[in-house]
Length: 238
Ligand SMILES: [Zn+2]
Image (tube, rainbow, N blue to C red; front, side, top):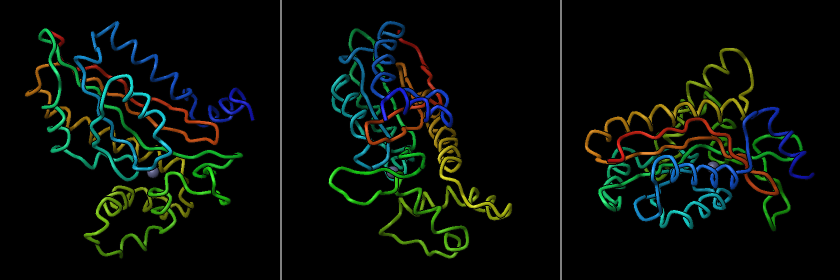
């Protein structure tokens, strides 16, 4: 399937999805032209899922802006929390009185031959889950997650389970099998609300601009797409 046909397919579900690299390249230029973000006065941080499938855009952004701070983890939730984001806010370079923090995060979902939540990976005969963390939660189901004891050796996954429990309960009440696209959107909303709550508390002590890009990464066999959820630049550049 060529890229245009794939994009058309993806846009039936994520109407604003774009090729990831194209989206981020455009935003990088926009951030410089409108807000004065440069590689010299900006610290880039990302909070995506651990899954290596999301690396191309992370590496693209890292090569543009410089080394990246990581505040994410399983499922693309901001597991780094207040401590992680507070830490990176102290790592921002200042040039001629200007300092900028750029945060990029969000969940991800595979798409392959009409199926969501699945992706073939190089060198593997079987199709695998994407996002594996989120798919595992949906597969376990409401009852199993409710009864599952907290495992200190699996705390990120435990947290994703707890985040998704209201979604699973809603599916259970309506006797609907949990849908991976809806689950990904539910998780996106949770990430947006939690991340912006943390940023709101951070802003008072940060004398610069904070750009935030959140959205859903769609993994395909031929590369990643991105549908933005929120794009905001906050704070002052003077
Ligand atoms: Zn994942």
